[in-house]
Length: 507
Image (cartoon, rainbow, N blue to C red):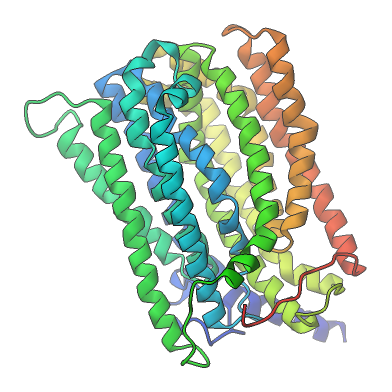
């Protein structure tokens, strides 16, 4: 009897991870194994490629700027900080895709595509508005995020980089939606176009081997990146529209046509209000702390930018790819469970077996994250960090500071890698609980420290003593915080104490 139950459980888990229970939405892929995007392994391969290519270019772009003028390397971080502001928008409705658009058991194909169309129109409109606001307030942005030594020469760079608000809004909306629709090949296409075109243009125009006798500037690099961001985002949007038409032909009933609508916006906004609030709180505190880091001087600010480039360019690529894969399959499993217990039931109860089926992708991602990130941390700390930092900045003082930063808190990122996967359980199921865990992290750790640093009187000499506690401590605190919240969430769900909004297949 136990054996039969185990066989049934394995069958259900495999069904969730391969998508075999939903033949209506996505035609069966002719590819198998690690290239079948409807499976966990296949989606992970596509996601690794999609996150790796932008990280590679971000690393190379600092090298190009270092060759042009090493003092201007810090200016390129404005692009990152504008991206943090835009993330308040991008982390709102798009992150509802996993639990709403990713629900392929209780929603029809037409419904899911209608939700995606609505999300895209909303995000692109707000992205365009933000771009205009950033261009108009470029002096204030430079004052907040560029060291005084290079501020006057950075205004044009800030204005050009402001277009990131539009391109990233489009890219993130397309990426989240298409992953939830089991098409991670769309964000991979976006990343591939961006990477290839960027590298070719950079080599031809701003590298040491560029064509012509002119002297390139960092503004040249910004213009190239702006053009590539827009062209790749538009290409991804066009590819999605093609796929949407193809998916619609396979839908049931085929005569229904997806459309943008206020009803779809309300469906997205219901869980989106929690993800938007979480993002606004987290990014506001982060930018507050970044403003303090920028005020510590050129070398310290540059080292922080190089540190983040290495972190996002090497360490975070597998973490983000695993998280995107986790979100996709936890979202699918959540939708399947809702369909089984009754999508209109307000307080459903989940069994231990249900929880295992829903969350197994997250625990699988945790194990893979540990296997990948522990060796990466050890390698960078022992051999690679100083040389890599100097390679990106062309500055010995910056390389020394960056090495000290990494070696102080490198071990904390192991907790971060696991925390990402565990938090994805809440993000792909009940975004209200995702906000609850974020409130714990931000209000109990980050906010008190953000207030404290304004009274400490930090200097470039002692700044990292505090910043390492703030940022490194947050990574460890987040791990225990999200683990506790997920445990409470599971306990409440098994007892039917989590109210859920009814799901209607037409919405």
